[in-house]
Image 1 (tube, rainbow, N blue to C red):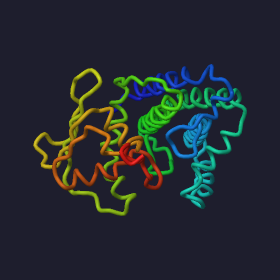
Image 2: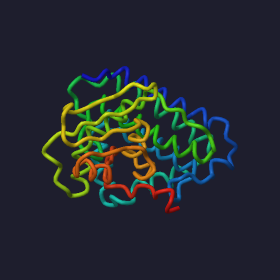
Image 3: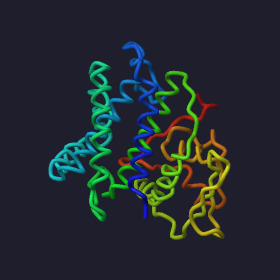
Length: 263
């Protein structure tokens, strides 16, 4: 069973690491473009504040979240961008303060969710541990975009293990959201951790396999990089196909990023 407190601790650490990048930014630098088309630094932080607020609502008021979800699905391909755009229009100091408050409150609430409780979301309902993992994943992914905009280095940490595990667990979701039938057999995934160790999931002798750096895998399943720009290797046709559609986040299939050679 996942250690909820450990995951929430790592979620808080990931938020703090991103906070360091934006805490002292001049207002004009919040308007810098990021690798996400049309999104500035303010859009990235605004999206995290908006989504943390939605997660807080899901954990504290299911009826209110269900109503919000119904509104969102009226525009399934636009509600995320609309939310980020609205948040990005706020004064940077106000937006930053709101994000800090939302993520702190969410961490407190998630620690107290009873074991076995499923929280509603834009994809399948999730346990508190899965929700915390999803928030960590998004914080890290959007943090990578902010770091790129600011020319800052992003050192991989062992917190990537949560994201990699989520990427493996959402394999069938990635197939389903692309209107494809998931393979019946499990895959073997072996990833090289930042400290040089190996994180592994699935049967050791599975025919379908994915290997490579954990950071590359996390970038791929959050669609922050094109597959051709990773050192990931697939063995088997099904594994090859998965790496083309891998998606660890809820909602419609994403457009991904262009390969560097195509830019």
